[in-house]
Image 1 (cartoon, helix red, strand yellow):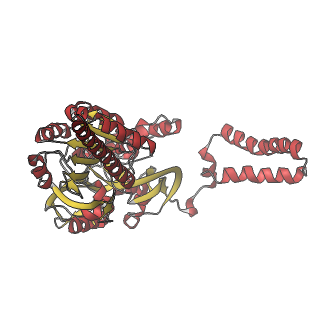
Image 2 (cartoon, rainbow, N blue to C red):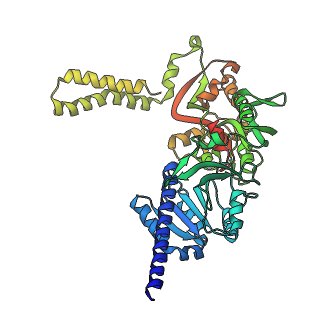
Image 3 (cartoon, rainbow, N blue to C red):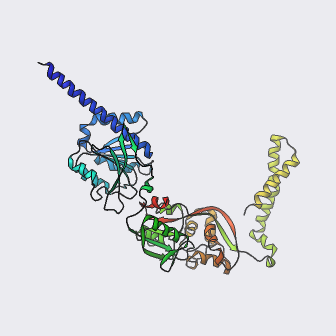
Length: 475
């Protein structure tokens, strides 16, 4: 009589153990597949305390199996999740954030967490568990609104209750969640049904209007008959056709933008982008460290070395002694002494080591020293990256050049104005070679340049953490 209850208990216990083991294998394989697909740094799993406590053994086994595969993971409850995710932000490659949801109350809890998170930072896997009630499964199949604060570039993978379809969620217009199938869970792995990249799958907006700002005098973008023109203007118009958006506002600013210490604000186009007044700054912005920390840059549109430009002198009127006015007499004496003495010192050092022919060595070293000297080779426009570089630099040469800078109120307001001053006044103009090249035909004189050794990279700008920067770069 006692045998039957014991046997029944044993059968039920074994069935539960098998089910638990199946669950461990399922979740571990699912996490591993997505981790490998997206190249995430690790896995952070979050759920309610009640759900964790009822399945603590299962999750410990999952963490152990992931660890055996070389994947770091952690299990936290919802109250700890935000702090843990913020700790990883900026310190490592984006993690895989796994959210376990069992009922609508937990949907509401995660909604409150998500509104303060950058939903485009990690890769998300939201699992509506098999034990979830009908209400949450209905929500999973037909999400309403945008409860999870999704962005256009959010990568949110969805596992919906007892379905073997692996889907994704994102938002185009901000108030609506879009979904589509990504793969099918079969034979212990995900069979991906598309090999398209993120921006191939989401290549257009939903009739969104974009606000654009340009810089007056820019050689890359300007307004003509109420429309954008120039190289960047054509790029913006092509993007509008490809991505299905229209330009609702076109604002012209006199400056690219710099930091105003009196008002503690950024001016120009950069200021408008930071204040959210425009979406895209369509101009050739230099990628300085200060700007890169503030706004999003597109992929480089032009790269060139920075040079000092001066008016080319007429050789017929050039006084040859002008070449010697670059330095004072004592400096020239030091230079000539160095040229004469250094090859001899180098020859003595190497002669004691190699015992080669002394005359050949000294001729070789003289050619080296002369070569070094022969190969050596101010004004900027207002509120430019170059002006800020000179103003904020701690480099001794930069500070000396800043002392020669004309008063800020007399600086030209445009790139063309600065290059024209080179022709009309006794000034040197510091700018990017790519920018100067675009205006060469408009200059009234011939100018020559001196390389400074600095390479400048130019690109358009968008608002900080723009969800569309990746799509713009992709297109």
